[in-house]
Length: 502
Image (cartoon, rainbow, N blue to C red; front, top):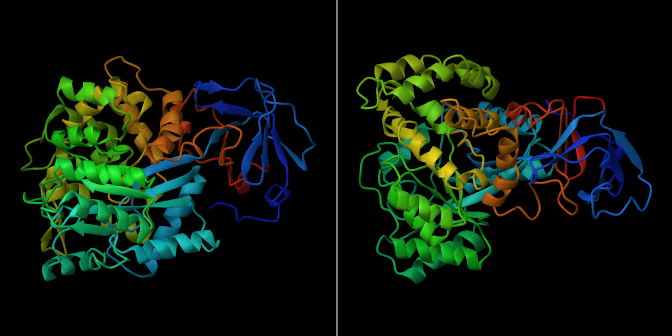
């Protein structure tokens, strides 16, 4: 577990702390800064980096000098697309859930993750309580940035609130509030709403519910059942909503699983697109549209890791990409579950693989939960091909790192798995399209940009927040260092993890 914040000189509010003899990561340049560079922390920020061109020498002595003994220092990492509330594998609302959430948040700091974004929560009271505990020091964890969902009524994640739906949500351990409640994580408008009504919904999400991002959805299938008929925004509605968020200074993202949604999102100028089209392959014109845009992509390949199986009755059964994924997944699947979940929760996954191979996963033996696995089985066969083409079309410099925890059966800390899947998807057939410098840039600066936070986070630069992960290994030589357990972690300039006796 991370060490508690203690009365160390490095944690004094205005102390001037100088880190020396470290290998500081130049995220922009894809290499370490030259030897001899040091870093000064003061008032929670990087106050100076003496030794860099254009940086003045240290003007005053440090209150404390810490010798890093050659260790590597990188910016704090991001998970741009996750969920705090347990959706997959835990149906308990009580003490186990709270311990699991605490484990997930503490695990983030253990692996250097200092910023996560929750991209969907139907009951904001739960997440607000968690954020308050983190801010008050009752829970150890990263900063939590809350997205609010804006959707036409009847959308995938804004279903009409029928009694059967509420019962199913309750059985999944979720609560659904009326959409007009200021505590609801979804703001809805009429399917045929005019553009001003759509703009007003975005404004309410920001001013009334504190949205730090606005999330849309282009999935035309319904939640849980995955049957057709969910409402989606028209292109004019999406453009109006995105424009309103821009005017109010809030980034936008979208649950993107269709080619049509990909096109409309780029045309609307969304800040980022979460996931990838899985309904069909992107056309060359779509890739050119992406190249000409400024939107980021959060591919969340981890979704494929947990949802693509050789299931009986699935049209993708036996596909070469799913077979290849199975060979990659089988040796590490259990270890991912072990590191992510409490033993009491982990048991809920026991037998899941065998049930998936048989083609049916049922809740309490009644509710069929296998439909999502059938639906998302194309993430690797189609989505994987789209991912590689987008990556080659400029996506290498505009991709962020999210793993869709806990919809994916892992925690918010498991961004190392997303990096493993970048390697799995890109470094194939003798090609080396992905390396440690790419992994570091994706999990830091590019993720900060996807969340609209690049002015404060994502790189080691004077004036930015002093979120610093200290690593034993070289992330430029080994991408697996990105998201591995850290030797130490500074967050807001405070030493919050110290495994190496700094």
